[in-house]
Image 1: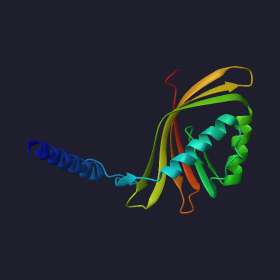
Image 2: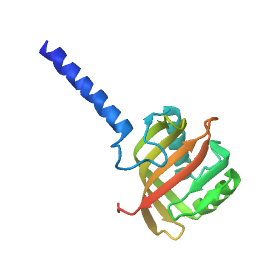
Image 3: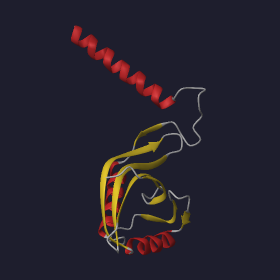
Image 4: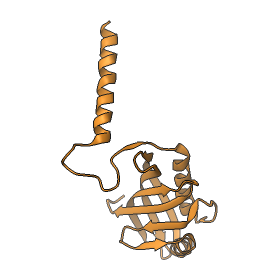
Length: 164
């Protein structure tokens, strides 16, 4: 009986805690995008991991996961629109690197309940080797949005330099 009561109280606490997380603390801040999320599609996360691997391998044409209307917002504040424009710029930038090695710390596929949009959050680190042999490490946080066809429609990126 004690075990049943403990399990019931634990599950009740988890459910209440999840409800509080979904609703947030009323009155403190209002989310401008959403504060109501659920777990997203694992298949979307797999696509993002493949895109990261394509970047490392300098094989940006290996997969066709981008929507024609792709918008990318970079950490420096630059915004680029269009699949063709983004791929051309990515190939040019990646072509200037002799090697890229990414480490993925975590990823999370999520879905905004109130907006009915799917996305993947990913955190990692990128070690870039320039053509002259100089190395640069940067830590990344990215959010990748998907359209209804399962194509990446938007990416927003943040970077930091925490070191190796």
